[in-house]
Image 1: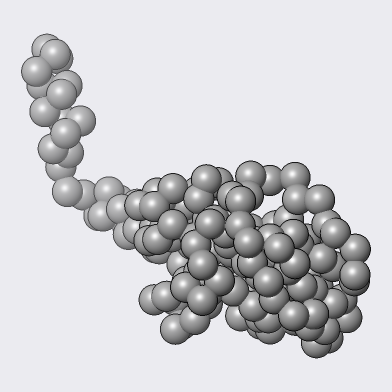
Image 2: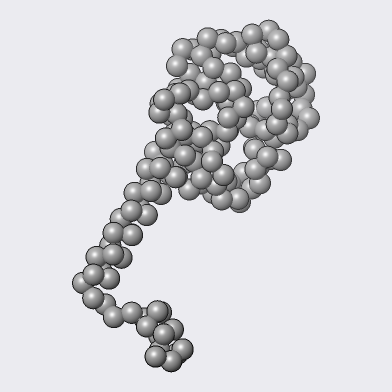
Length: 166
């Protein structure tokens, strides 16, 4: 068999029942994988800069919190409107803790929390608030945006769909 016949056979195979069954199996497995396990998300907005860039594509691992809870520092996907609107935010406190911002510094349980990830400079002031049981406090990394224009706050665990994988 010559090279052009090999390429033609590779690019345009005969449609046999076996090939059609294989194609259906791959399509089904891919659909299930990218709907239930690795949820693709395109970031719109600058709330997570400099960690994540506007327009970048990421995957959320939906099974990451089956046996454990989110921890401070995790970037999580939060369902707002089903699967059509998903926010990417960083967990900074868990249920039972108190959280506040004073002159741009994050305080958890009255103590300043050193944040090891890149956070932009800010001058936020937010009164102390106790997080309810089973909830988490989330905020973006780009805190140079005025606090009034930033989506953040307490989120129930059932809205957290998973951890940012990539």
